[in-house]
Image 1 (cartoon, rainbow, N blue to C red):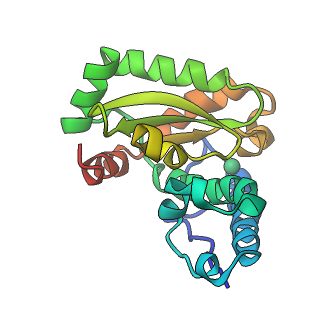
Image 2: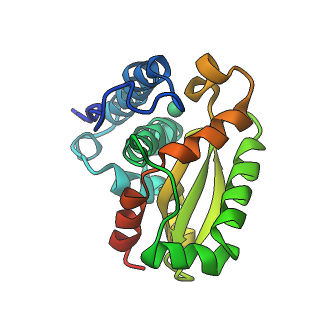
Length: 212
Ligand code: MN3
C-alpha cells in the first residue's frame, strides 16, 4: 500500500506572520496538503504492487508517462501537489527574503539581468496565471541555466524532466487557498509579501544538489 505521509512543517503556523497568516498556513497544510497526500496514496493504491510500493515521489513524477493511464491524471495532480507543497514549506522561513548570493545569485543575474528584473518577471507572470497554478524558478540541466516557468494546477516541473531536464528550485503557490483568507482577491499583494519569507539558503542548496 502506498504510504506517503504529510511532512511536518519546519516552523510553527504563525512563523510567517504577518506576510502569511497562521490560519491560512494551518488549513493549507492540514487540509490541502493532506488531501494531496491522501489522493496520491489512493491513486497508487489502485494500481499493481510495483506502483503501490514506490516511495520516491520525484522518480514517479519524472516518469509520469509510465504511470498506467487509469491513474496518470490523478498521480499528476495529487503527486504534483504532494511534492510542490513539500518544496513550498521548506522554501520559506521566518525572517527570510533578501537576495541570493554566490552561484545562485550569479545564475539569476546571467539569466534575468539583475535580481530586481527577475523578481519583477516572477511576480508579474505568477500573478497573471489564469485560474490555479504555480510560478517556478527552475534549473535547466540541459542549458545549465536558471529560468522562470508557470505550471497549471498542481502539475510538477519534474514531469518535464524527460523533455527539458528541469529541476524545481523555488515555487510559489497562487491557488486561492494559499492567500484568500488574508488577501481575498488581492493576489498581487500576497505575491509581493511572499518575497519577505523566501528561504534563499534552501533554494541555493537545491541549486547545488541539482548539479549546476
Ligand atoms: Mn496549495
